[in-house]
Image (cartoon, rainbow over all chains, first blue to last red; front, side):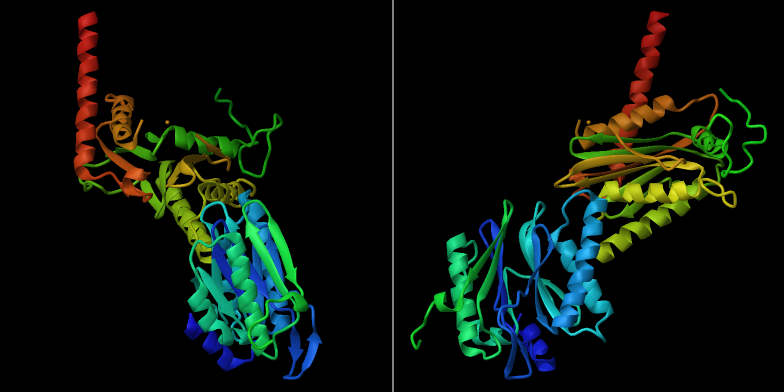
Length: 216
Length: 233
């Protein structure tokens, strides 16, 4: 997992922090809300990087915002057509495979990586990473973006499989807050989406309500 | 039935005055005149059996297969023109393979049956081509969805159609032996395949020892029936 994100960082600045974590009964997908141009201008303080591609499947994007929006728009269309043909909700694997095909076949032109997470009837909660060149990998939790380098230690130490919902929300909020605290191109509010069989819940933690650590 | 088309049966692009497409009906006749293919679904799998008529003593055992593997988890048994069936099995294989390449998982059987049925139907629309002269049965087994069986006929309709797999293999062999008409056709070879929990979801030919046991059971049951007939007389 470390190898992938390092490679991405080598090619371009993924100016964000994104993560996804599986817990008992669902997944949480989360991101910061800052979009930047260059190293110093914040073009948006409240952008939503969590894109819904189907009822129970979300993507979070890193890299060129334009490329990411184009790919997710295409994937959303293909996925909805596929799900109507199948007459059943799509598998998370199918959504991730569609993104992978788009990323791999157009790898010369595109510069965007994704985390696809969701819930389906067959395998329950799942997380897939689709990296820049079009690699597809399944993980129990994953972090991405430029801010992720600052929290590898935290997530490696604090992640436990089969957490409860509250523990998972605390884990994600802490991780994003720590990354936003150290990475100048991540910031704003914390967007979380909790996906379970029953529902999809958006949780927004504004900047002044974020957990504080020793030096703040 | 057998009404002759007289002029409305020359191409698949012509309807008859009573709303029938005769070419498609003639294609179904090709299926009716061929030897038997059976697919039966049981609670933990699907079993296929085909009566392969031996046209020449020079043919090796196991040649002219009429049961095909479409994907690891899907099998197809055919009746009708074998050449048409072979070309359709290639089409089905491509569909299943493209699906896996695009979506990352096994193709659901209903979707495969629908796609192949659409392909078969396309050949019933134009005068430049003739309809496929074969029907086929598709079967698969999946842990979550269980055993499934679909049939597609030359008009392009697909429709869905319960013992354990091991017992069922013997019954399928028995049915084929009963159905085989000793007088009309000469020798035949039995082809058996299965997909289910017993093969962990993979479609395979039934292993030789189980097949021999099934054939023995089938032949014994036939003799029993003959004996009981004689007693009654």
